[in-house]
Length: 66
Image 1 (cartoon, rainbow, N blue to C red):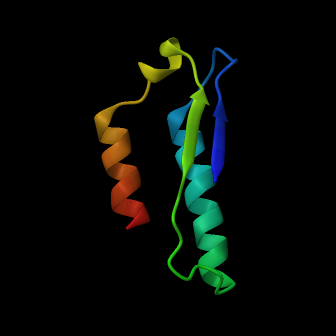
Image 2 (image 1 turned 180 degrees about the vertical axis):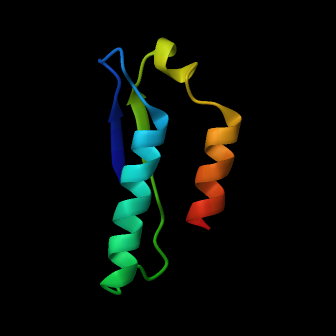
């Protein structure tokens, strides 16, 4: 489970996705990823930051994660 807080002006969705993918890769190397379910909590994200999340970024993330 990952929580997102966007109180900063420099919110970068690629940094978030990079952190998530690195933690998945670490779990794969340590053999802890038996049927993982990724939950990303966007409860504390602002509308200004939502505009920065683009569909190509989400597609690249899902392509890498699957």
